[in-house]
Image (cartoon, rainbow, N blue to C red; front, side):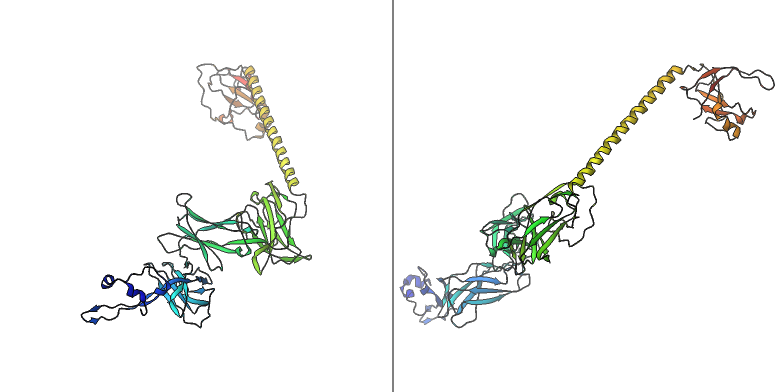
Amino acid sequence: KKSASWINQIRPELVKKGQFPIPSITWEYAGRYRCQYYSHRWWSELSDPLELVVTGFYMKPTLSALPSPVVTSGGNVTLQCVSQVAFDGFILCKEGEDGHPQCLNSQPRTRGWSQAVFSVGPVSPSRRWSYRCYAYDSRSPYVWSSPSDLLELLVPGVSKKPSLSVQPGPVVAPGEKLTLQCGSDVGYDRFVLYKEGERNFLQRPGRQPQAGLSQANFTLGPVRRSYGGQYRCSGAHNLSSEWSAPSDPLDILIAGHIRARPSLSVQRGPMVASGENVTLLCQSQGWMDTFLLTKDGAAHHPLRLRSEHQAQQHQAEFLMSPVTSAHAGTYRCYGSLNSNPYLLTHPSDPLELVVSGPSMVPSPPPTGPIPTPAGPEDQPLTPMGSDPQSGLGRHLGVVTGVLVAFVLLLLLLLLFLVLRHRRHSKLWTSAQRKADFQHPAGAVEPEPKDRGLQRRASPAADAQEENLYAAVKDTQPEDRVEMDTQAAASEAPQDVTYAQLHSLTLRRTATELPPSQEGEPPAEPSIYATLAIH
C-alpha cells in the first residue's frame, strides 16, 4: 500500500517472517494491500490484492425489504438501503453460513444520493437470507459506515402453522398495551411476528409451558394508531433455517380515532330465552362504511357488517338466531371508514344481553342479512318479532303448565295403583272365605275330549250361556270340569264342553243326576256348580 508509513515501523525480525501486525485499527489502515518477497537479488511477483475495509466511520443506514420481508418461496424481493447522510456508494452484504459475507456493490451514482436498492431472489425456505448494508464515500471506498441492523428475510415453508391470539382483545384504545401470543404444539424454538405491509418483524425465542408445546409472547404498547393492522406469526427450529407456514391473520383495531360514538340497542329487550331470535342494532348519525360488534372477553374477530342508510341514520342489524347461553354477555359496537378499516370510533355504551333457559316456542324463520360467524359465540343472527312481552313471560307460563300437568298425571297413576291393589286384596279374602270345595284324594281324572274353553255354534247354546252348568268329576285332581247345557240334551259325545274352573269362584251344589231316557240310574254320583262366563 502506497504511503503506508506504519509498515516502515515494523520490526525487521517480523518482516522477515512475513508478519505485519496492526496494533489498533483506524480509518488510515483502510485500503488495498499486496505483498512480495525478496530472494537472491530479485523480488517476487505481487500477491493478489487484499482489501482491508474499516467500518464505523459514518452513521449506520437502514435496511428494509419492499414490500415486506415475508417472501413467498421462489419469489424475488427488493432491499432498500437508506442513509440520513448523502453518499454515492452503498454495499449490501449477505451473511454466509461459513462466516464470510458475500457483498454486492451498488452502481456508482452522482454524489448526493441517500439510498440504493438491490434485487434479491429467487428465495427458498431451505436457506437463511440475512443481510446488512453499508454506505461509503467514493473518495474513500474502503471506509464504510457502521453496518445496518440485520435484516432476515422470512420465507415460510410447509411445516404446521402456529396459532395467534391476543389479550385482552383485538380492539384496544390508544395508550393501552396488548400481548400477542404465538403458540404451537410442534415445539418450535423461535417465533416471529410480522405485520402486513411492515418492513420489519419481531423475533422471540420460544418457551415450553409444558411438554410438546411452545409459545412466545409479543407485548406491544403503548398502542398508537400505527399499531392497527393485520398480523401473522411463524415458528422455526434452531437447527433449521426453514420457517413454518404462517398463522391465520389477526386484526388489531385501534378505537377512539374517529370522534363519533354509535349507539347499540336490542329489539325485544335485553332479556331473551334460549332458542329465540334477537337483533342488535348499531346506529350512527355520522357517515360510517362499516359497523363492528364486539363481546367483552372474546378474543376472536369482531362481527362486521356494511352500513345501511335508513331514516337519516347509518346502521347495521346484527341478527342472532337461535340464541344460546354462549351469547350472554356485554356487547359494544364501533364504526369505521374504508380509508383505514383498522381505526375505529369510540365504543358505544355497553349492552348486557341476558339469556334465560330454553324456549318451548318455535322461532320464526330467519330473514334478512346474516353475517359470517367469526367465533363460537358469533352465531347466525335473524330478526325478532315485534311483541316485547313474548320472551321470558311466555316461556315461564309454558313451563308452569307442563309441571302442573305432570303432577296431575302422577297423582292419577298413584290412585289407579292403590285401587287396583285394594280390589285384588278384596277378591282374595272373599274367595278364601267361600271356597269350601275340596278334591277327593286318589281320584283319577278321565281324559276329556277338549281341554280348552269352547263355545257352541248353535243359537240355542248362545241363548243359554248364562245358565251353563259344569259337571265336576269327583275324581279330578286338577279342578277340571265337564260342561253341559240344559237347553240341548244331545247324546252325541261331541256336544260335551269342558272348561277349566277357577277354584276361588266355584260354588258347590250336590245333587243327583236325573235318570236317563232308558230309566237307568247314573253310573256314579256327580256334583254340579254354576259357571258364569265373562
